[in-house]
Image (cartoon, rainbow, N blue to C red):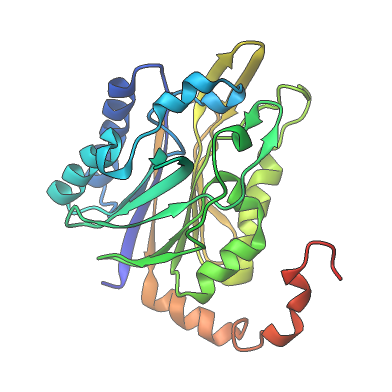
Length: 288
C-alpha cells in the first residue's frame, strides 16, 4: 500500500498495570477506528516511571518477552484489528535487564525486539541503575504496512541512530518516550529542544517521525516529574503536522504517501551524496 495512516498517543500512567493496559487499549482502538494502521504507545506505559529512584525492588517489574503482559495483550489486539504496534516494556533476559520495544506485526506475530542503546543517568532519570545498554543494534522491520525504525526516548537525541535506521530502509521513525520536568532544575523546560532534535532527524533523513510521550505528574520519594506530553508527528521535512497538548490523553494521526516520500528522498540526493569514508571520526569518543 502507498498511503498509510499512523498515530501517536499519550496517556497518564498509574500504579495499576491492568488499568494502564486498558487505557492504552482504548487509545489504540480510537486510533484504529480513525484509520491508523501503525499506532505508537509511550515508553514503559505498564507502570509509573520508576527510574526516578534507585531501588532494587523495582527490578520485580521486569519480565521476559514471552511472559510480558502488555506484549501478549497487544499481540491479540494487533491480530484482531490488523495493526502494527511497537510495545515498550521492561525486559528481563537471564541476568540482564533492558528497556525494550517489541514490534508486533498486523498478524499478531512479534517481528523482533529493539533494546534501548543510549541509557541516561541523571536526577529523576536514573536508568543506568536498571538497564543494561542495548545489544541489538539499531534495527528496522518490514511490517505489513511499512518499513519502520524504532528508537527509545534518549535515543532520540542522537542523529547517528536515526541515520542508521534510514540507511537500513526505514520509511518512518517511531520514538516511544518518557520525558518531562527536571527534578534538579525546576525552571528548565526541554520540550522545544526535545522536539527540535527529532525534527532534525526527520529533515536530514527526509523521513516522517512519530513521537509518543507520557503526561501527568509522578512522584517517587523526593523526586517529582511532570511529563509534558506534546506527542507529535512530522512530515518528511521536519515540520510538525500534528501535536498533542501537554496535559490531555490524546490520539493524533497523519497520513503519508510512502511512494511519494521515497521519490522525494531519492531526488534530494542526501543519501547519494554521503561520504562514509570521511566519517571515521564518528567511531571515536574523543574525536581523534
